Length: 348
Length: 254
Ligand code: SF4
Ligand code: SF4
Ligand code: SF4
Ligand code: SF4
Image 1: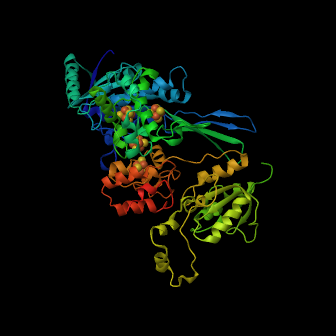
Image 2: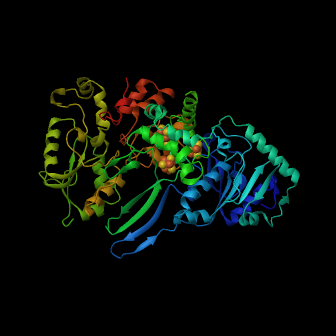
Image 3: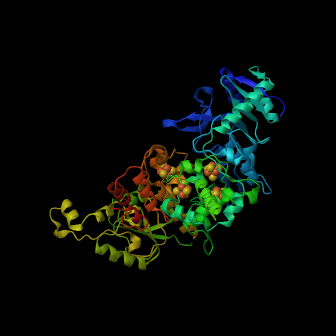
């Protein structure tokens, strides 16, 4: 994109304030005991730009966990599509590169051949300001997945920020992004030297990773070893079928729909809510359940994220955020499973 | 359904909270009474027709005496659908805690004269008769109750909530108390429906809705041990609400 700008840390509150006049600004806010959550903020006071990760990714602002789709009335024949839009347009502030990539991965599902009306509306109404990560987070491996620590997307977001000691480098990536910066006197032009330093920060950030996954040939390898014992062993001894892994995964798109009829027996509302392949009834169809074993469900998660997604959408379904293993009550780590399969294949 | 469906409500060993829920506390009491015919319910009216027939028999409470089992069999025979309501009926609930102690010892602790007590091992309703679904909860959940009544009126198959509490917990965006605060939460093995009430108040789930269908109690018990719980603690967790269930057996370690 064209220009890069500088915003002094002291002026961040001014920027947030001016953004909050137009948008509902959703930013990382510290919660009890070390957690961070994305919440609407009116000023920079509550903001914690140094956050590591959040339990739920900002996916939920575009693709909410539970969403009303439409209402039908049997007596009047009326069909009313629910309006998915929020009252004001929203702006996600300081979303990390992995989570921004995750939204671009979701776009491939919801905005491809068959466009999802509800997703489209929310996506169009959402401005995204990315904050690059200067340091690896606890269980992240975005560097291996090509989704971090600095943003690698060229489009699909509005501004990318890089934090330095005294200021932020701000790079707009869309017309909207230009508008959010342009005409605001607290931005200065960045120099080539500033962008050079950005490179250095990125290289330093890349060196801070302790978790890695070798993705070279991984999809093919996983598909060749679908019956590897790691699935059964992990599933039986540790998997609770609780679905936390997929609920927190920023790229999981599966949902179920539910119709609820009122006591008038005429009005029915259909809603959708996040569903999970780790749940027993997910694969229940007429005539049976094609993934009734926990092992099969575990294999589905790992191979969808790291293998079949590539064929389906041309990218990995895992952006390396580390949430699934962090929020799994028994700490099940899909990269460990993949590595075990890689090790065994190498030995053979 | 042309005629108003006939409902019979039967109560066995429990606190009667589910019947209270049905008659007084749930949101759609009036709708329900207008659209159905409650032909037998002792809490509501004396008399009635305990002999049936019923379109649906709602069974509250666990089975702890022989007469209850006998009556239950008769009710089953005259009911199109038979649905246990609430944890005692669905999975033994609180009355089944007594199964963890020797029967005579527990009777002596409560009654001075045990000659009148003819209590037996606590069982859930489906230990005795075939059931056609369940309205889970302690007390039973209003969402599933409405789903049952409306499905009956529309003559469709009800869709009861049948996933783990964790699903509702994540949809409510609660920070997970098990992972973040090392609380021994029963959510991963417990049937949802409560809306993750306890985790929503930063408390571990007690498991009061009983097991979810595919619970991996063994794995959660193992995790609890890693978190520092003793075998006794773990045993109590898996017997507080679901002692007779097969789904939680593997967690009932001694
Ligand atoms: S699979 Fe796990 S690490 Fe990968 S994107 Fe999903 S939650 Fe993050
Ligand atoms: S991993 Fe499971 S829940 Fe996630 S997108 Fe794939 S099938 Fe759906
Ligand atoms: S979060 Fe962990 S225990 Fe729960 S379903 Fe996922 S892998 Fe299994
Ligand atoms: S707090 Fe309990 S119910 Fe909620 S996600 Fe964690 S383990 Fe599951």
